[in-house]
Image 1 (tube, rainbow, N blue to C red):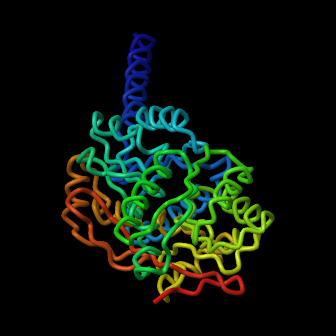
Image 2: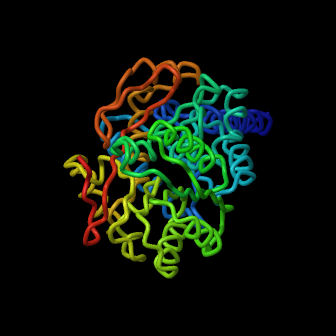
Length: 369
């Protein structure tokens, strides 16, 4: 009889232990239940990894700051390698991990994910993405970056009629590069500037001599180029110098606004586009914190990584809500005080900081007023 009772007691204890174990596994603590899970699809290897790492670093700083406010953020990183197929695979991995929001970088990676996030009702926040009309494709899509107009308008809006009559155009042949180039073509018509030489190149190109030589042979009064990675900017400028091209060069991108890129190429006298973070007296605490944490100066991806996580913190206040509520909450904020100044959150999901034209003088950026 005693043995039987002992067996019953042990059986009950085993059942209780199993129930408790399942409660621990399947029913997280209140803190875990209110932890916002962000899936980040970033180029952490390959030619654009410098941007992915800087976004990641900025995100981590914001995560730490929000934790001090009692807002718990978990970030799961996936490497897109700057490739669209890798990006889709990364998205599927994150979807299985039940993330609340997905952050992506680069146009060619972000665009294929818009329809997927729309179908799954997961908010998608894109940065370093300047292809045309991305956020308007879904109520769950947001762009926290300059659109295709910003890079070129930073320069072209400073041109007076007659400053230039002809130009050459060199651009990256992907969603981003084509979108920016199309805007340039439309905009220069307003300025009565004729494009007399036009060349493009594929992602991964490192030798631009043929394209630059063709443009040089047409002798335009200025050349504008659209690049997407440090190696592209470095080689375009080096080979432009090697070919003894004495035509004013404008970068319709921000790659040369990063000091380490300028240090690797003879960029004196070239114009680039630059965000306020790098040329205005803002974001000083973040810059100090970044340098202390990583022993590096932040590249232009870092403030966007930081701002996106802070945006998520403000939109959720650390409380679990569904994808539609998160998207609605972001729009309802109306504005965000970012590291590039106060920005409007537009009804179509666009959050676009302004860009300035700056000339590289003695290795420094001198902003055009």
